Length: 257
Image 1 (cartoon, one colour):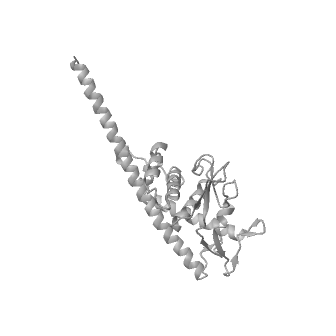
Image 2: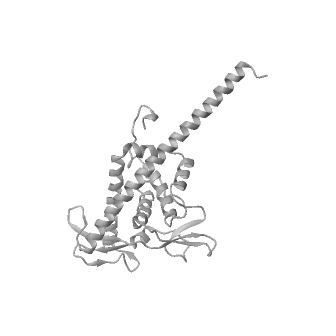
Image 3: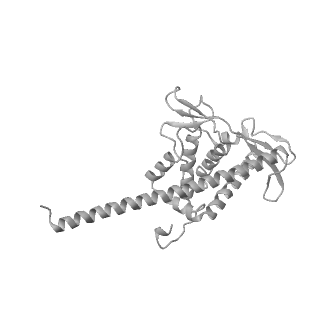
């Protein structure tokens, strides 16, 4: 027969487990809501930015200036098809063309940030071991920033078309325009995180298991853009973890989030 003390311990343990499960559910809900807000706001802001690029390109207006405020031209993003390839086999090559152009832009621009030498403590989300993302399906090497450079069209300050490469060399003018656009995209993210400081802090120190779960379950697996959305999700969590983008918010209690 169970003693009174044993019964008390049993009830106490059940209460602790129930409380712990409730806290986990609350934390998951909090992270889900914060991520959903951030990714929707980012997508909206990126669409506005891409529209501005389209208008400046079509009307041959200068979008960017150099550090001395001299106009340097504009650029326009192309939603190029790319591939996911399993190494050691030529059979498993999956073509990816984002249905939402803004998602394709975010995919590569976010990964330009997380792969930058400017931020040595982070790295782009690894899709899966033995898999690479590339533009040339016959290759076995992952895409580079040169491939991203070729994903845009460029006009100089006098509305002349600029090639991304001159022979085998990168065009300095095109590179500088892409650099300026990366800086603008960085500002978009920083402004967003500054506006939603609490939400970016909610994402800041999420464990790998919960992050993977949210990125896997936040989107419809039948959606054409599922893969791109999943990777963007991981990159958003990575950038939220960076103090340069999302400064630590000091709170008295975690429940205040």
